[in-house]
Length: 352
Image 1: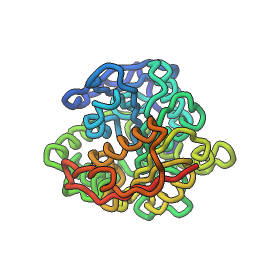
Image 2: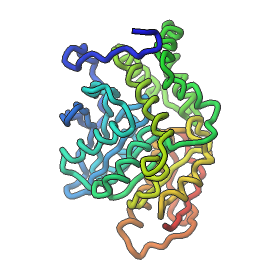
Image 3: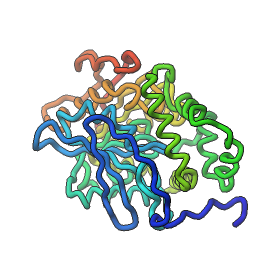
């Protein structure tokens, strides 16, 4: 094998038993076998029977844990589940080693079909935002509403702070990075991730930091961790290059479901300037901009994102709800985040 190739992925049957993942209070895990993959799904039992289903998809390097703060705030209006994409979280690599956007979307579709829960309120962050955009475009029957938090959709001018992440897609970079950072502790790696993904990393609680370090230590023991990261990054870059009906922006225009877009003003991975383009692409979308948020607003400002989703839900189920530009105070103060002290948000609604 040349130095520019990624290491092969061993069959899931011979992988070492991974350490147990953290399960937040009120959550449970289940395993779903679909063609080509075994997926771990995190879920919260609903507050009452009959609530509509919701399904959450994380970003590059993330896991279903990224959605725990938001899921806890929505358990009175939806029955939430969050998936670990193949090779991430507690899910082993896909059988065929395919980490393309199409393959991730196919895994999500098969998971939804296997559960029989569709149509769902579908959520996606970053890479997961690109994945669920494709799902919503090709399988509208599975999607009630679409909520995108900093979706990784193609940008012509990528921010310099996002370049190192994109370089993971280049053959040979991931193995080189692992060699160069061999001496880094889990704490150092977590601080680097927080500095990249959060608008204000200092607002992360000591308990939250400790949990993140424990998860990083668990992931570093997985032999396929960097392989999954590099191949997924390569899959995302490849999706950026697609044109025509398979291009992500073209597929965004095909989405029929009511859509909520959430963008952070301090996002170092997805350009804040893309918010208006996304609002134009997704017909009838509602755009929420959070000037102080970074790349993972559902973790930094879960109460604000929950409030915005409740508003989307009200508009999606109430034909008499009016569109137009709305300020948060007119909808009811979304309230401060438990960790960060409450942002100033702007909400706009566009018509298709």
